[in-house]
Figure (spheres, rainbow, N blue to C red):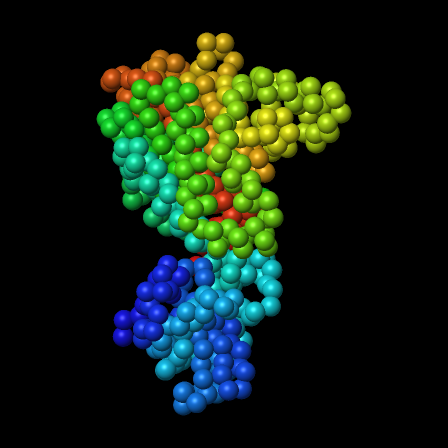
Length: 466
């Protein structure tokens, strides 16, 4: 039996008026009114549910159906009726209902409120709740919007390696990948004999697709990567996970201004797409998770982003502190801006999203292009109200000698970055890019304040279920 998706009724119920349809889904609620019952059904095709009306006189298994447990899987055949005078615009009057899969009495997801902490302990079941149905539908739509934005601009989508031998961030917080027997590691003198390993060299899970992405940017001009990345950072904050997805465009013949224009366009495009296509999900989240969510998203989508240098931002913050604004973290030139500083700039000073450029080189990655002052690099972070930093990028150092010197200066081995350095020898040009943590973006789109709740199966310190 071919089922009709519930989403089709919500798109045009009038087109199904009086028709017999077959649907299948899971019980959200069941109310027995003695002679008839109301079954709320959802099949996952949309956020909205379908109300099924079951009449005792029409169904031989009425008692079983009227007492169906939440979560039970049903197949229903019946006729669609429009009900414009009632809270729901249409309903399905059932001719037959079959319980395909019943639910045991110890089913942990009930109609009563469950905390997010409790639901994290039942990751395999939490997508059935309203909260996570909304979050993961928005996540799916946002991923589509990202691809649409770059494809419409003519960018090439590049899938970069998950396993790598280079540390793009230079931080060393990487997960080692090996097939060696850890109980009997082969050694040469006192060192691991990597020639016996699968790749015959130390390999790790990638923290970024940027370095490999630049290979393609130097041939295709504009490219983007969008895939999983990993960081072995021993952090238990709400904003950190060990496995996360990154959006990383790279653009040849592009300056910092062009980089910011593409970044601003991306954020506005994704937000507008979610506002246009996820109104039911946003309405629920705005009501129960973050009451200012929709207003904040509309504000970002309609704003012209401010632009300020890091040095100017420090001066603004110092002036605010001098006038009595209490910051927990002290302000001085050379610090990495904290969330409270970023939010002050966007929420109280500029009152709109803000690009901060030209950061001190000592707090930024090795590949960022040095400015003439010798102290700063052509880096940029985008700050948004309510969160602070949502993306970061830079001009890439395109001079071979300067980049090689910087790699050595930071104690890294130039041989490990030979291919990256080659790009500076063979047809180098000014180029730029940025990175957006996809989960951070989904957090912003949903108002969810913990990264664990926007990942289908989060990997964090001490937790790698499923």
